[in-house]
Image 1: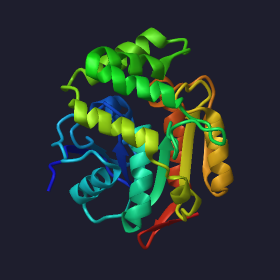
Image 2: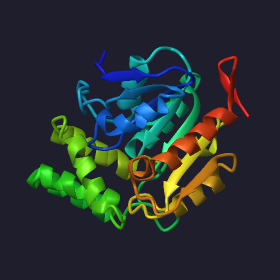
Image 3: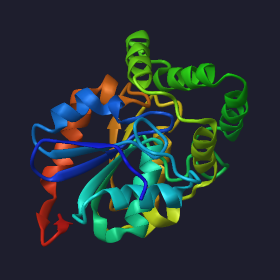
Image 4: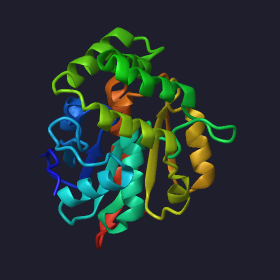
Length: 265
Protein backbone atom coordinates (compact mmCIF):
# COMPACT_ATOMS: atom_id res chain seq x y z
CA UNK A 1 0.00 0.00 0.00
CA UNK A 2 1.28 3.47 -0.91
CA UNK A 3 2.19 5.54 2.14
CA UNK A 4 0.12 8.72 2.04
CA UNK A 5 1.12 11.55 4.34
CA UNK A 6 -1.83 12.97 6.26
CA UNK A 7 -2.59 15.18 9.23
CA UNK A 8 -5.86 15.53 11.14
CA UNK A 9 -7.01 18.50 13.21
CA UNK A 10 -10.13 19.36 15.19
CA UNK A 11 -13.38 17.56 15.97
CA UNK A 12 -16.77 17.42 14.31
CA UNK A 13 -18.04 16.48 10.87
CA UNK A 14 -15.09 15.09 8.86
CA UNK A 15 -13.65 17.01 5.90
CA UNK A 16 -10.83 15.52 3.80
CA UNK A 17 -8.83 18.12 1.86
CA UNK A 18 -6.92 17.38 -1.36
CA UNK A 19 -4.53 19.97 -2.82
CA UNK A 20 -3.71 20.88 -6.41
CA UNK A 21 -1.03 20.17 -9.02
CA UNK A 22 2.61 20.40 -7.89
CA UNK A 23 1.56 21.44 -4.37
CA UNK A 24 1.35 19.65 -1.02
CA UNK A 25 -0.90 19.81 2.02
CA UNK A 26 1.17 22.57 3.62
CA UNK A 27 -0.60 25.02 1.33
CA UNK A 28 -3.72 24.55 3.48
CA UNK A 29 -2.08 25.05 6.87
CA UNK A 30 -3.52 28.33 8.16
CA UNK A 31 -6.85 27.83 6.41
CA UNK A 32 -7.18 24.27 7.74
CA UNK A 33 -6.47 25.36 11.31
CA UNK A 34 -9.33 27.84 11.11
CA UNK A 35 -11.66 25.25 9.55
CA UNK A 36 -10.68 22.78 12.29
CA UNK A 37 -12.22 25.04 14.93
CA UNK A 38 -15.57 23.54 13.92
CA UNK A 39 -14.81 20.37 11.96
CA UNK A 40 -12.45 17.40 11.86
CA UNK A 41 -10.08 18.26 9.04
CA UNK A 42 -7.73 15.76 7.39
CA UNK A 43 -5.04 17.02 5.00
CA UNK A 44 -3.53 14.57 2.51
CA UNK A 45 -0.51 14.83 0.22
CA UNK A 46 -1.19 13.44 -3.23
CA UNK A 47 1.05 10.49 -4.17
CA UNK A 48 4.53 11.71 -5.09
CA UNK A 49 3.82 15.15 -3.58
CA UNK A 50 5.03 16.53 -0.30
CA UNK A 51 5.76 13.63 2.05
CA UNK A 52 3.70 10.95 0.29
CA UNK A 53 5.27 8.02 -1.55
CA UNK A 54 5.18 7.89 -5.32
CA UNK A 55 2.94 5.54 -7.25
CA UNK A 56 3.96 3.59 -10.35
CA UNK A 57 1.70 5.57 -12.64
CA UNK A 58 0.24 8.95 -11.68
CA UNK A 59 -3.22 8.27 -13.10
CA UNK A 60 -6.55 9.34 -11.71
CA UNK A 61 -7.51 5.77 -10.93
CA UNK A 62 -4.33 5.04 -8.96
CA UNK A 63 -4.44 8.39 -7.13
CA UNK A 64 -8.02 7.88 -5.99
CA UNK A 65 -7.35 4.33 -4.83
CA UNK A 66 -4.26 5.41 -2.90
CA UNK A 67 -6.11 8.17 -1.06
CA UNK A 68 -9.16 6.07 -0.25
CA UNK A 69 -7.02 3.17 0.97
CA UNK A 70 -5.13 5.54 3.27
CA UNK A 71 -8.34 6.68 5.01
CA UNK A 72 -10.65 4.95 7.45
CA UNK A 73 -13.86 3.44 6.12
CA UNK A 74 -15.90 6.38 7.41
CA UNK A 75 -17.89 8.49 4.96
CA UNK A 76 -16.64 12.09 4.78
CA UNK A 77 -17.00 15.35 2.96
CA UNK A 78 -14.15 15.57 0.44
CA UNK A 79 -12.86 19.01 -0.50
CA UNK A 80 -10.62 19.30 -3.56
CA UNK A 81 -8.83 22.33 -4.93
CA UNK A 82 -7.91 22.57 -8.64
CA UNK A 83 -6.49 19.13 -9.62
CA UNK A 84 -7.70 17.99 -6.19
CA UNK A 85 -11.26 18.79 -7.24
CA UNK A 86 -10.88 16.37 -10.16
CA UNK A 87 -9.57 13.72 -7.76
CA UNK A 88 -12.38 14.05 -5.20
CA UNK A 89 -15.02 13.99 -7.94
CA UNK A 90 -13.50 10.75 -9.23
CA UNK A 91 -13.47 9.33 -5.69
CA UNK A 92 -17.14 10.22 -5.25
CA UNK A 93 -17.93 8.48 -8.55
CA UNK A 94 -15.96 5.28 -7.91
CA UNK A 95 -16.18 5.03 -4.09
CA UNK A 96 -19.63 6.46 -3.31
CA UNK A 97 -19.79 4.82 0.12
CA UNK A 98 -16.77 6.88 1.22
CA UNK A 99 -18.11 10.29 0.21
CA UNK A 100 -21.20 11.94 1.71
CA UNK A 101 -20.69 15.39 0.15
CA UNK A 102 -18.26 17.27 -2.09
CA UNK A 103 -16.72 20.73 -2.16
CA UNK A 104 -15.08 21.66 -5.47
CA UNK A 105 -12.84 24.67 -4.89
CA UNK A 106 -11.55 26.34 -8.07
CA UNK A 107 -12.15 23.03 -9.82
CA UNK A 108 -13.52 22.05 -13.20
CA UNK A 109 -14.77 18.54 -14.15
CA UNK A 110 -13.30 19.11 -17.63
CA UNK A 111 -10.31 21.38 -17.08
CA UNK A 112 -9.45 22.27 -20.66
CA UNK A 113 -11.33 24.68 -22.86
CA UNK A 114 -13.41 23.54 -25.83
CA UNK A 115 -15.95 25.25 -28.04
CA UNK A 116 -18.69 23.95 -25.73
CA UNK A 117 -16.96 24.14 -22.34
CA UNK A 118 -15.00 26.93 -20.62
CA UNK A 119 -11.64 26.10 -19.12
CA UNK A 120 -7.88 26.52 -19.45
CA UNK A 121 -6.40 26.73 -22.94
CA UNK A 122 -4.99 23.37 -24.04
CA UNK A 123 -2.02 25.18 -25.58
CA UNK A 124 -1.07 26.59 -22.19
CA UNK A 125 -1.09 23.15 -20.55
CA UNK A 126 1.01 21.81 -23.44
CA UNK A 127 3.47 24.67 -22.92
CA UNK A 128 3.79 23.81 -19.23
CA UNK A 129 4.45 20.17 -20.13
CA UNK A 130 7.18 21.17 -22.60
CA UNK A 131 8.82 23.67 -20.25
CA UNK A 132 8.98 21.22 -17.35
CA UNK A 133 11.75 19.34 -19.13
CA UNK A 134 13.74 22.53 -19.68
CA UNK A 135 13.41 24.32 -16.33
CA UNK A 136 11.15 22.70 -13.75
CA UNK A 137 11.44 25.42 -11.10
CA UNK A 138 10.78 28.29 -13.50
CA UNK A 139 7.75 26.45 -14.88
CA UNK A 140 6.32 25.90 -11.40
CA UNK A 141 6.85 29.56 -10.52
CA UNK A 142 5.07 30.57 -13.72
CA UNK A 143 2.16 28.33 -12.77
CA UNK A 144 2.02 29.91 -9.31
CA UNK A 145 1.93 33.40 -10.77
CA UNK A 146 -1.03 32.45 -12.98
CA UNK A 147 -2.99 31.50 -9.89
CA UNK A 148 -2.90 35.02 -8.46
CA UNK A 149 -2.82 37.10 -11.65
CA UNK A 150 -4.89 40.30 -11.63
CA UNK A 151 -5.39 40.31 -7.86
CA UNK A 152 -4.67 43.49 -5.87
CA UNK A 153 -2.43 41.64 -3.36
CA UNK A 154 -0.63 39.68 -6.10
CA UNK A 155 2.88 40.01 -4.61
CA UNK A 156 1.86 38.98 -1.10
CA UNK A 157 -0.10 35.97 -2.32
CA UNK A 158 2.70 34.85 -4.62
CA UNK A 159 5.18 35.01 -1.72
CA UNK A 160 2.81 32.90 0.38
CA UNK A 161 2.47 30.32 -2.40
CA UNK A 162 6.22 30.15 -3.00
CA UNK A 163 6.98 29.80 0.70
CA UNK A 164 4.50 26.94 1.12
CA UNK A 165 5.61 25.08 -2.00
CA UNK A 166 9.32 25.31 -1.16
CA UNK A 167 8.80 23.55 2.19
CA UNK A 168 9.04 20.25 0.31
CA UNK A 169 10.92 19.05 -2.73
CA UNK A 170 8.99 19.37 -5.97
CA UNK A 171 7.40 16.19 -7.35
CA UNK A 172 9.50 14.41 -9.98
CA UNK A 173 8.97 15.05 -13.69
CA UNK A 174 6.95 11.87 -14.24
CA UNK A 175 4.50 12.83 -11.49
CA UNK A 176 4.19 16.42 -12.70
CA UNK A 177 3.63 15.33 -16.29
CA UNK A 178 1.05 12.81 -15.09
CA UNK A 179 -0.83 15.56 -13.30
CA UNK A 180 -0.90 17.70 -16.42
CA UNK A 181 -2.18 14.73 -18.44
CA UNK A 182 -5.05 14.34 -16.00
CA UNK A 183 -5.91 18.03 -16.30
CA UNK A 184 -5.78 17.78 -20.09
CA UNK A 185 -7.75 14.57 -20.57
CA UNK A 186 -9.96 13.79 -17.58
CA UNK A 187 -13.65 14.42 -18.16
CA UNK A 188 -15.73 14.02 -15.01
CA UNK A 189 -18.80 15.77 -16.40
CA UNK A 190 -20.78 12.49 -16.60
CA UNK A 191 -19.90 11.81 -12.95
CA UNK A 192 -21.08 15.27 -11.93
CA UNK A 193 -24.29 14.92 -13.93
CA UNK A 194 -25.10 11.64 -12.15
CA UNK A 195 -24.14 12.73 -8.64
CA UNK A 196 -26.72 12.32 -5.90
CA UNK A 197 -24.92 13.79 -2.89
CA UNK A 198 -24.72 17.49 -1.93
CA UNK A 199 -22.08 19.40 -3.92
CA UNK A 200 -20.78 22.91 -3.31
CA UNK A 201 -18.77 24.63 -6.06
CA UNK A 202 -16.67 27.65 -5.08
CA UNK A 203 -15.21 29.81 -7.87
CA UNK A 204 -13.60 33.23 -8.10
CA UNK A 205 -14.56 35.78 -10.73
CA UNK A 206 -10.90 36.54 -11.55
CA UNK A 207 -9.69 32.95 -11.82
CA UNK A 208 -7.54 32.68 -14.96
CA UNK A 209 -7.48 28.86 -14.84
CA UNK A 210 -11.10 28.01 -14.05
CA UNK A 211 -13.48 30.72 -15.32
CA UNK A 212 -16.66 31.33 -13.37
CA UNK A 213 -18.66 30.41 -16.48
CA UNK A 214 -17.48 26.81 -15.94
CA UNK A 215 -19.51 26.81 -12.74
CA UNK A 216 -22.57 28.00 -14.60
CA UNK A 217 -22.12 25.12 -17.04
CA UNK A 218 -21.73 22.71 -14.11
CA UNK A 219 -25.03 23.90 -12.72
CA UNK A 220 -26.72 23.12 -16.03
CA UNK A 221 -25.30 19.59 -15.86
CA UNK A 222 -26.26 19.13 -12.21
CA UNK A 223 -28.98 21.61 -11.19
CA UNK A 224 -28.83 20.41 -7.59
CA UNK A 225 -25.32 21.70 -6.92
CA UNK A 226 -24.71 24.92 -5.00
CA UNK A 227 -22.65 27.42 -7.00
CA UNK A 228 -20.82 30.03 -4.94
CA UNK A 229 -19.26 33.13 -6.49
CA UNK A 230 -16.43 35.05 -4.81
CA UNK A 231 -15.94 38.43 -6.40
CA UNK A 232 -12.38 39.50 -7.20
CA UNK A 233 -10.96 36.12 -6.19
CA UNK A 234 -8.52 34.14 -8.35
CA UNK A 235 -7.45 30.50 -8.24
CA UNK A 236 -6.50 30.48 -4.53
CA UNK A 237 -9.55 31.98 -2.77
CA UNK A 238 -8.71 30.11 0.43
CA UNK A 239 -5.66 32.39 0.68
CA UNK A 240 -7.00 35.65 -0.77
CA UNK A 241 -10.58 35.47 0.57
CA UNK A 242 -10.21 33.18 3.56
CA UNK A 243 -13.21 34.34 5.56
CA UNK A 244 -15.55 34.19 2.57
CA UNK A 245 -14.52 30.61 1.78
CA UNK A 246 -14.81 29.56 5.44
CA UNK A 247 -18.32 31.00 5.57
CA UNK A 248 -19.37 29.14 2.42
CA UNK A 249 -18.01 25.83 3.71
CA UNK A 250 -19.60 26.28 7.14
CA UNK A 251 -22.97 27.07 5.61
CA UNK A 252 -22.74 24.02 3.36
CA UNK A 253 -21.69 21.69 6.16
CA UNK A 254 -24.26 22.98 8.60
CA UNK A 255 -27.11 22.87 6.08
CA UNK A 256 -26.56 19.14 5.59
CA UNK A 257 -27.25 16.96 8.62
CA UNK A 258 -25.40 13.66 8.90
CA UNK A 259 -27.91 10.85 9.46
CA UNK A 260 -27.20 7.14 9.15
CA UNK A 261 -23.94 7.83 7.34
CA UNK A 262 -25.50 10.02 4.65
CA UNK A 263 -26.00 13.75 4.33
CA UNK A 264 -29.56 14.91 3.82
CA UNK A 265 -30.82 18.41 3.07
